[in-house]
Amino acid sequence: MEQYQELFLVLQLVKVAYGLKFLEAFSTEVLKPAEAGILSRARTPTINFVLGGPGVGKGTQCTRIAETYGFTHLSVGDLLRNEISSTSEYGDMILETITKGKIVSSEVTVKLLKKAIETSEADRFLVDGFPRTEENRVAYEQIIGIEPEVVLFFDCDEEEMMKRVLHRNQGRVDDNIDTTIERLKVFEAYTLPVIRYYTEKGKLYKINAIGTEDEIFERVRPIFST
Ligand code: UDP
Ligand code: MG
Image (cartoon, rainbow, N blue to C red; front, side, top):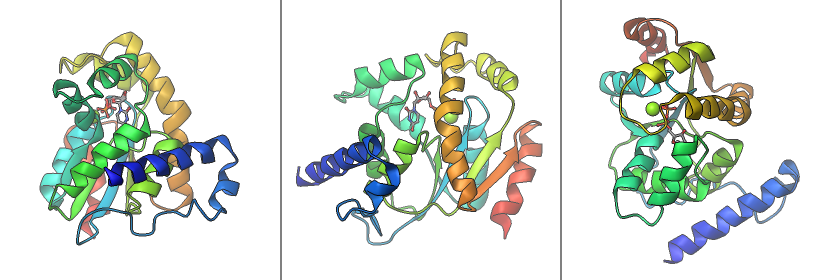
């Protein structure tokens, strides 16, 4: 319980920081970024983020990267979808948010991600589809606090993303035209700033996501082969 109170407090601070000016908020005493995070794990794992618009193939490539280079693949979209089918108190809210193509609050997402990392014994994670907003990113920094080593960005034009989403037939509530238009808008307005942030930090690897699965994977390899 105490742990959740702490989490809640940190999130409130992140929200306050967001309402105020970003840099100012970081210069205060209270809002120091968590240095090693507050994970209940003996060893701090390596984290990589994998970003890209809807249907770009993040999941497909993550599976290949994970198999080839020994990562544990954590799709944050899957973590959220699992909550819908469980008895979680957040299930209805998550379903509604995903159906609209909007972003689930960091409070819920970061909590799920933290739990997934803490309950795994893996040392290296590919976190797929997160952080989707600057607010997600800051909440992650405050609550988990492990600086990502690499941020992959699968890049592809919107028309192609729309085609892929509409052809994948995975029975997802959000794989329809209207929701995907919204997801593309959300991607552009909220996720591109995160991508810019990591570009400036020198952590971003942009990959051309047009081509066959094999061709795209060949472009990813050099990043992890060194
Ligand atoms: N989602 C979210 N926060 C996240 C990850 C996913 O709110 O950090 C929600 C959001 O509504 C998104 C949906 O889950 O549109 C599906 O995400 P996923 O990454 O599975 O979709 P993809 O981009 O791979 O098509
Ligand atoms: Mg996915």
